[in-house]
Image: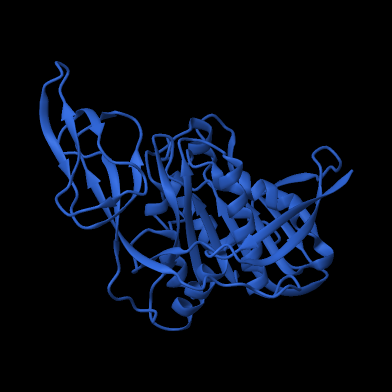
Length: 357
């Protein structure tokens, strides 16, 4: 039985911009066969829709590590949009958003191809951890990977060199993980030239007003893609291992707005009118113990402000945590127990200059 997902998009001033509905298919109303392959066929064919498990490597127990993908082709060839989530195994809002995008995309209104990767890092997802437990590596620090490397390096190589190789644009969906929460923001590759400009335009189309221009960073997916001529953006939302509908729906809406920007669906694009640009300052604990936080998410923060203090097992205060700059509290760890060096807060500070004017 079919139904429709309907959304209302408003500006930051609460002015109605547009309403739109996309047809969906309810769970259980269709069956899509899943193939497991070593070399996936990613060629466009009109109205093609397939689910594939792409083989990364055989594991110690004889099973295969795979990456699930869904390929959705429209009536005519056009841009290729890749939406990837689950790069970190404990960041779940993006996973749910990609699952919902699978039902929200109407192939009859679509030009080009949407490649959905709901869970990029299946081993980390299964263990509910940020890092891949098979090699204790953060996947988003080893892109573009190595074909003869560790499990995570081989996974990164498959993602960059096969799944994303011919993308027009890549949207990577993240969150803070199981121990913290954050305010939504969008990162883009802040580099001179066409790739930087297109990454910036896609970030504006996504709809999050708070943008983080990123310089080239070793091992990070959007930087590895920019070096290969592929524009990419990376969203952050939610946390605490949750799939809050108010969060993942914002991701779904954002991806649909990017599809409008790429002219993949026949609706006019809408862009953030007054974006705010920030740089990120993570604040780490100087000692382990119990961290008693004295700020809230979204608070305005002054440089040198005490963000909390640390208690030893006897309840004695042993250290303080201070803000490194003026700004806004963009993220915080919610778990009170901390190890030395844990990131317990993130301060956004206004960005003074960037490559993309």
